Length: 126
Image: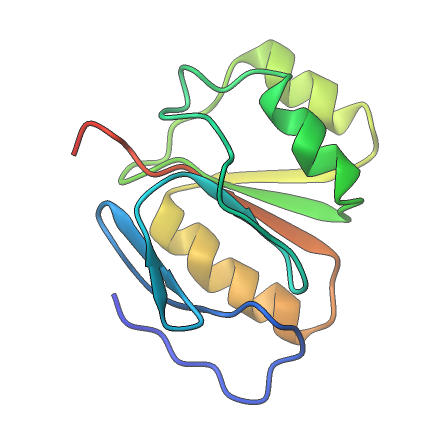
């Protein structure tokens, strides 16, 4: 999927997504990552929703988000109940969706000036 967004606030814009790859600012990434309008963390660990734990969300919380978009790969897959509750208990919104939807939603929220973190899982098995 190719995306285009002109005039959005922020340094990091998601320009495209396909299975196994995200394009941000003309650079292609093939690993799970965290992106905010002004921060890009390419060494975010989980390879799947099943392996995503509370430790992975420590880096997310350090980015002080208003809302977290968890992109779970090709299909929407919910993380453990415990993980979802631990995020929600901090007062941060959590939206779980497939990665393509998370990329599109990130661009919209970023353009609105929201404190959004996209936590995008790239399935390493593809």
